[in-house]
Image (cartoon, rainbow, N blue to C red; front, side, top):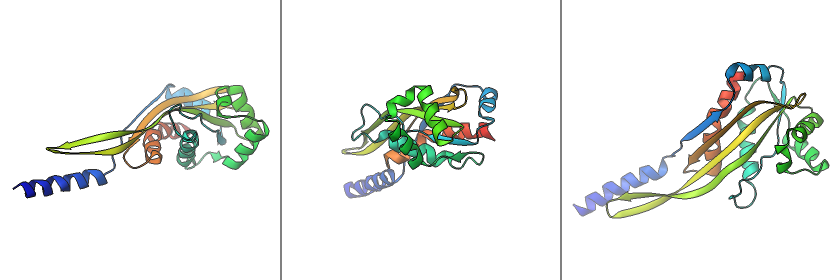
Length: 196
């Protein structure tokens, strides 16, 4: 009987461990009509480097999240997404870092130099791994759970107007990249709906 219970619980653990767990939350702060108006004449967009999370190791959380943003918005048919290398060349030339992009004037200037109608800027607010414990009778195991949170703004270059802003959080047991995708999907899907 004990062996049967161990096999049963072992099967549950295996299934639980193989399944991907993700939940996301997102908020945006503008009514649909004003967002549509603000996005109406945007044909090209640049995703600038995001500010790293203060608790992230290695200083790469901003790059991971910005990459996930590009991955989602490249499918918006009306937008031409500016190549990342071109953006990084201008950033290097201007001797800027991600913290400088909190100033919408600086962000707009980078956008103007790369030929973008708008820029997406943001900051990573959470980028960490936690243990997700699972208790099954006398057995206890834990899984890594990756958590990512960020906020972003779309700034129109010609007048430095913020036409969209939102924040999101996501989690995954697979990777930071999956947690990013989970977090950004509802927020960027909402943005993409405004462009159509």
